[in-house]
Amino acid sequence: ALMEAVYFDKFKLADLLIRAGANVNAMNNAKVTPYMKARTIRYSKHKDNYDREYQTPMMQLLLANGASTADPRDARAKRSSGRALPEV
Image 1 (cartoon, helix red, strand yellow):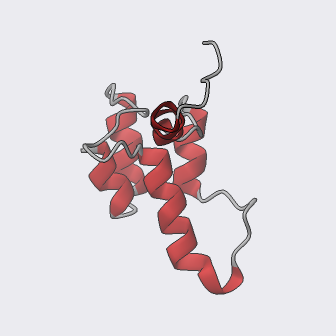
Image 2: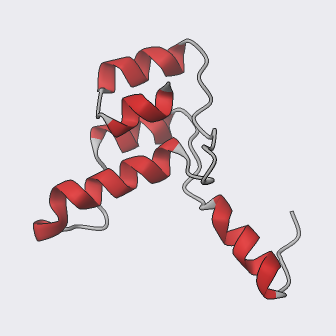
Image 3: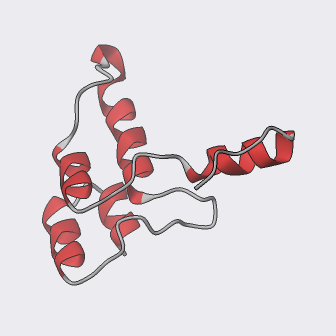
């Protein structure tokens, strides 16, 4: 439900879901997190005047509630390429 709230840019709904315990780092089947989706939406809405540092209110909400900015697909890509992964 949180992913859909982010996708449709429903800030109040996302805030309600997070306060009710939604996992801000949950991934969908494609290994995309709500923060990654919010980042993609930011680009699509602002691509003519794209500022990499700009954080939308949705991105700020997710970050304020512990969302990770890391892309979980990066570790998978490194693992399949044979490169060493950093120790966790």
